[in-house]
Length: 116
Image (cartoon, rainbow, N blue to C red; front, top):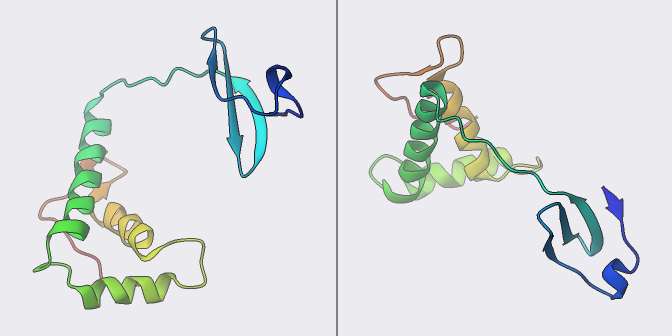
């Protein structure tokens, strides 16, 4: 990434230019980078991983019978002092427990991991 002092002859520049450059600010520093077009192959393993991820998110947010506030507090406690939040730590372990990387398939029945 290139650090810019006066992008586009101004004090601030944001957005894309001509479909090839992107100007942005990150942590108060202006920068420019080449515009990247993400690919979305929609392969079966990718779709299954997305399904497991979405399921973990919905369980954390909307399933108080499965994941209580005490359970969330436990995950937050175990994540304290790390660069993760309790939600991020839960999701990491949820994905490990519910997606088999060897066969690239989701695991059934689903497992809700204990706070670690």
